[in-house]
Length: 123
Image (cartoon, rainbow, N blue to C red; front, side, top):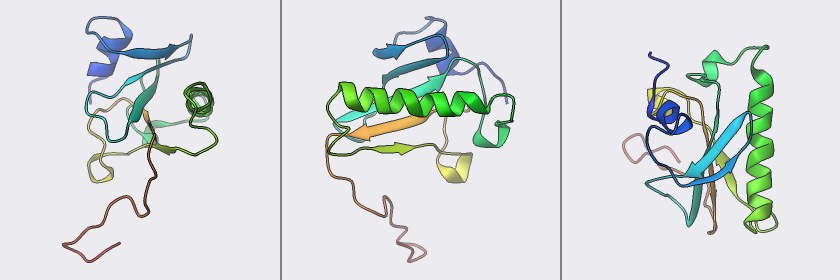
């Protein structure tokens, strides 16, 4: 998998994004296909393709992404009511961009399970 993704282009400002947060390690921007009233993606500025590629050396970035998610929830008024943070891994996990990222979803009550597979009868 190439390390050049749409997220790399957003980090490099080669394509626009609605950026809501940035620091030296991470960038957060609104999802172009939101699944909740508030849906942002939090990405590390260092490319890590999937959760499977997290190592001891880069694991501090994952914690930082969650710190950013909590900060955004607080700043946007969702921390008290609650929010969901999701990280997908590979095709069957729903990952479509191979640059690790958190989905931060808020602004509505979320059900569980988030997806019901009617073909397999799983809930």
